[in-house]
Length: 244
Image (cartoon, rainbow, N blue to C red; front, side, top):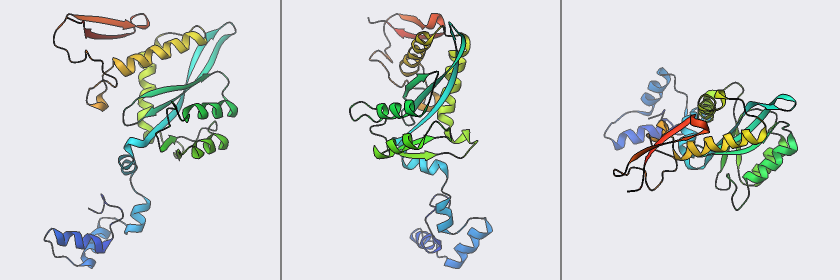
């Protein structure tokens, strides 16, 4: 009970146990918690588990990150940075920016796009999880805060706390980007768009109970011929039923 409710003090735990028919002294509650290494309520609440925070705000949290891609250009291989944002509840992803020259002003413009009142990806989000990348400048963070998005900055070297975006990066690399070298920025953008279409509409997600993020009206149909479809020259495949 104390672990699940970090703000419950000794007295409140005693009283809740009383509701359940257990008569126990406050000092007994204290002794049991101390023996198990559980701190008093003020200290426990300061150290509320990361999962508790995620559960409490699940429908209002997004997370963002970068990944790099080597692109063949007229000047040889150039490293591009891809900045993306994920809605943790739905797993929807938006590619927010692609550039070979990321800098503070570019990030501010990306922030404006993300918080646009009409169609910004973050317009209904209250929290954005970010790591300590220096590209998240003070100006970028201030812009998001002024738009109503609170920044949650992760400790250094803690990828496990941003596991959902880390998993997306692993997926897009192993299923797509590690299989070819993009020939120019346009080719890279096309490949990213094709992968996102597959990711949202055609790829089942274990974290969503095996469901699609954006199922079509034909999803689950039991009649009609089964046909295979592909993207990116056959790298990405899926199967669906044709209309009867």
